[in-house]
Length: 285
Ligand SMILES: NC(=O)c1ccc[n+]([C@@H]2O[C@H](COP(=O)([O-])OP(=O)(O)OC[C@H]3O[C@@H](n4cnc5c(N)ncnc54)[C@H](OP(=O)(O)O)[C@@H]3O)[C@@H](O)[C@H]2O)c1
Image (cartoon, rainbow, N blue to C red; front, side, top):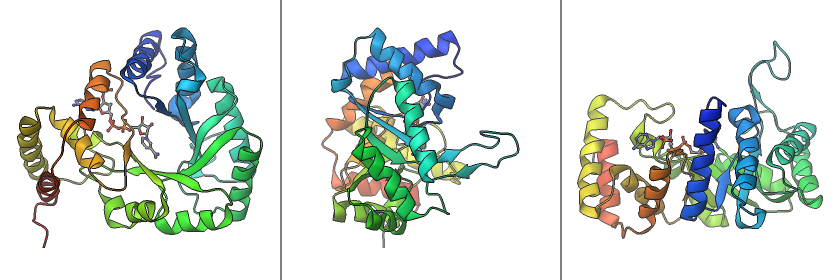
């Protein structure tokens, strides 16, 4: 979501360098949304694919829609979520045009529209799949009840729920989201997976004392596993049996390459709990 930066030539080159680094390091799944960089992220990705001869077949492209910013498309309109059929269909057309592709591998509904009509939204998803513009559908930031409701109206499986998971935000662990994913074979994707270490996660209310306690445990484990402390954070997420796929948001080539070390760590059950205890400030009962 940051690859286009401020859309200056320098920012755009930095974004393209990040895409190339990820591609060369073996990443094959790229996460987009109609709103990222106001559409510039999708355009830049297409440009990078062309410049670096990255073929369409070797990447999995996700995009999303449903978040509408204040004053769009005209002044005076509030920030809102929108899962109406026409908006979804139009948004996917825009993403395909910017990405210069005929299809999305995965299309996600970005954030639940409190006013959505599940029959209408399911119809839009079905149209997208029937027309070949979207291969698979999923959701993002859905609570289990919201997932169940939409899935009850869809004949296709909603194969992904992309939610925030990091050391500061473990809601998905506690509110049944990850349990539901395991029960139904839905793949959870974690957004902001290392943000919890590098910068405060969204809505983070942790005190300096909490942060210091977490850091001590992360540093201890970093030394034990011979990796950077934020790589431990990824290993902690990957340890969960739901098979969480972290969506790494770095635009720094070295960090993109280094993140892969998390896949090689034989992360111990006990260390998962040590870090959980450090973030909670108390041991489990
Ligand atoms: N579905 C949703 O609602 C939703 C919401 C937010 C994001 N997303 C998706 O998830 C992706 C990842 O989210 P995210 O970018 O917040 O997650 P992230 O990977 O946890 O954070 C990446 C950011 O943290 C910085 N960073 C990481 N480690 C660092 C370190 N050790 N020192 C300094 N800075 C460090 C990165 O800087 P560098 O670039 O310098 O590495 C980058 O700005 C996004 O790109 C987007 O595709 C989805």
